Length: 461
Image (cartoon, rainbow, N blue to C red; front, side, top):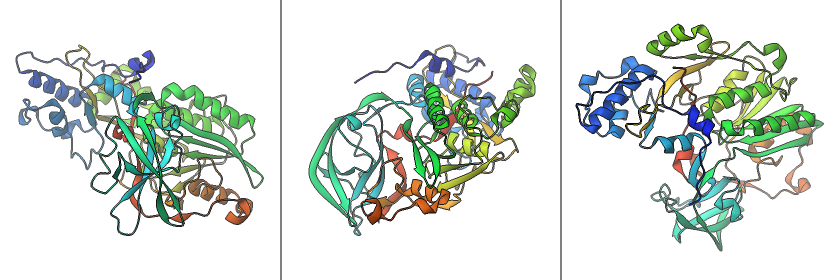
């Protein structure tokens, strides 16, 4: 498979925590690893006082199982902490490097019997095997390796390295096989998070649109360049499509905030957001850095759009963490209009913890902080997340391309901006669309690790 090296800056950002953890060598290998896990968590974990006492844990357990056994109210309070047996694999995931076909897809029933399922492609990654095979948003997969997709096999049917995808079409409410197929082999690929950016002329407005799927610091300059084009193009309305964005680097989320917020020159140096840590880590930060360690301030960005009074975000149940952070950061300073379905609901983030002495290769990604905006607001950490101002379900087929003014969810935002620009399907030349029945609300990727909801940063100590 094609191999991609992780840039040095990412390795630096995801290095072991600076706090050394002493482990006795008198126990078994699992006991030593688990003692390190416990001690690391007791220092950084947001809910460290809710962990069981180490004497009440099974230090002989498999380290992967042990990690989850010490989490606080796992799957309810803590829905997010995770561990990887390979720190390098973890670093790759966080930096958007995964082994993929390169598709994310929505899942629909093919008919009223609900016996079979169709994968409808939501997007295709740039440079991926899927893109090279000519696949695009809206294409339909009805078979994999000549097998129908069903409610019992849909979660595992794409697990093989090389796959034959049987393609279909959709018209007037009916899925039909086209008799064609595409054979693809997965590769290791660096995600380019910018799927589409364009300026749409709509009702006398210039609307900047960007579809952004992960907050990756290696693409920060690319994000700046998009906003530079928006600024040079005289954009006076902005739509940020975060429907498929499960999070990423806090620093990149902060960058997007700085590029959008009104009056950045006046706001630079004032508080954007505030982080809350556990008492142990808070005490150490206060000693080493003082109160500045807890707040992130606005920073001037040359390509900040400057004068916008409002911003539209397209959202879904997959919009999480760093995506929700941008929304929350901006709410005190401008009108934030949410279009789509409720977000995931994650107002906490994590550090990557690895062994500084290289005794073992586990990578921990525990929740280590909670985050609030400049007004101390952080009330979206529930199963409902942020609720949309304009509700719409993305279940209308055939899908139109991202950035198309008549794409279902984008069009809803544009109609709010100016309903007079709308043309009916017959006048605009658009293909008639109909609603289909979703099997599940969330779009998913061909590699499940791409669908994690997280925001992360480097620990200060």
